[in-house]
Amino acid sequence: MKSSKSYLVMLTVIVSMAFAVRSSNNMFSTTVPLLAMYYFHFSDLLVGLLMAVGSGATFVMSAVINSRLRSHSRRVLFLASSFTYMAVYPLFYVSDYILIWPLVFVVGFILGSLMPNIVTSASLLEDKTQRERLLSIYALTLSLSLIAGPALESEILLRFSLAQSFLFFTALPVVAFISSFYIQFPEEKNLGRTPYFKILKAHGFKTATLNIMTYNIPFALILTFGGIFARDQFHASYSLITLIFSLFFATSFLSRLLLTIYPPKRIFGLMTLSVAITAAGLLVLSFSSNVYIFAVSFLILGLPHGFTYPLSIISISRGFERSLRSAANSYFFSLMMVVGALMPFVSGLIVNSIGFRLAFISIVPVVAFLYVLLRREAKQLNLGEADENVV
Image (cartoon, rainbow, N blue to C red):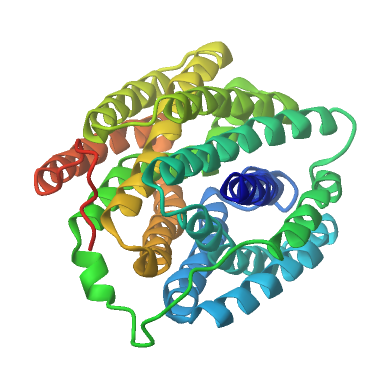
């Protein structure tokens, strides 16, 4: 009974914090490019550079700082980051073409502390079935937040400006700050340095990283320039753009719901399916002739978005003992942010050089190449068995 109550408390805390942080951060990620482009008249290249600054700051926090701290210090940093997130978020309302740069940097920096520690808390249960179900619920919550956030913002933008919408979403960082006091951190018995080379070389880590890259690379392009593409090509309103993003995350939610109801065993088959759907969605997006086909492409691309992240964190959960999961999650999140830092800038260069449509097509061969590497690495790791391959 006590164990069941503890599980429910952990579930409530993780769901509330994950929902608040991810929905507010996604609003930031999709709205800042529009704010920079249409309010401050940034070029495509500057928009990409701006978002790269945020992702680069996330990488520094996650890889250089968070991953090297002991559990107690990490918790202090986590609480301070939650408070700063709550304090800084409404300042986007008064931002200008200069102030937006340090604001994006600070929010990105904070994210590098928040997200890895939330997922680590979700992976601390000893029971494998409970742990993987909680990780699936965590991922499901992320998708739910990504549906609710854009849908709410779409309604807000019918009556208020892009800048004013940040004031409405400030309530979410407040919820995150309150929840942050209840997030659990792992006990650390070994006081030595984290064996990061051992983590980076582990098959579970490399499989998780290659799997997430097959989607994060195209997703970075979609997130930064998807809304601008719809605006420029189809003259879509800001409200419609955020609604289409909501549709994208609706199918992501459905795929994660399936993972929650039916916890995966042979996860490499789902990784393969995700890559195939990603390539198909990118092609539909590239050749869309109207806003309706554009919306259909987002519905397609939402499916692999739902699969890839939970499959990767489950791979890490199976591949590492509890004492190493925090560091493994930090390095994993850091590599995600490297992609997030580079891709907006690279995307800006590509879009400037060959245009939106060819930019989306050019990502397909990259995804195919990453899948070849993923398949080779997955052969070294038995992803279909119930037993864990713990490092």
